[in-house]
Image (cartoon, rainbow, N blue to C red; front, side):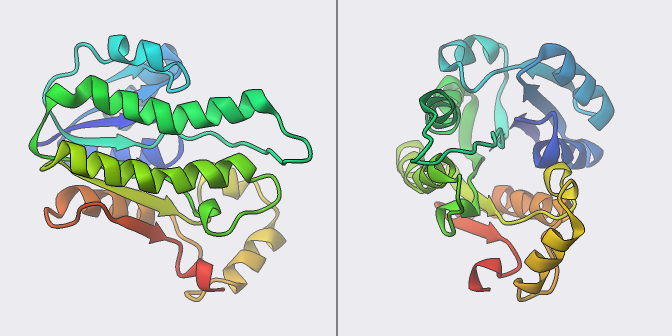
Length: 230
């Protein structure tokens, strides 16, 4: 049995990963910005417990994690959707996203440093906007590109703890993409070499692989069916 902390585990892929590992018999703790929602998600996924943690408030992270015990696996999957263009730049939302991923993720690792051991592993979530920006992705693309530098730095500083990044493409059955018009999803499938969009199960499996394989370190893994080639 492994001990697992999923930061950002109340919805989407983080929630599905928490469910997957809990069903396998691991001791899973998940976090969310709201304590009640985190507690509910823990009950629904089979996680041991849920705690409140807001990555955009990094000075409070250490306190929120003060009673976390030794960890085998840490998944930093908390994300935020940001629509920001240079022509209509919103400084506050940009600062929030930059803080969430580049400062919040790092402070989480800092707060848990003494709980990690030589065989521990960390997975950090990025995204494919860094490779194929779209209108409104000014901050998202920049921050996800920064995830590469963060992973490399952590892998060196935390060695032998392994640190890898996962960059999902369009996850067709995720809550966000399920709400898109059918023709949008059809167009995305047509531009994907596999002819299908990534699924939540695909991404969960990829996260699990990065955590389990002891020779995979400082790797950026794309799960997109080859979409970037389309």
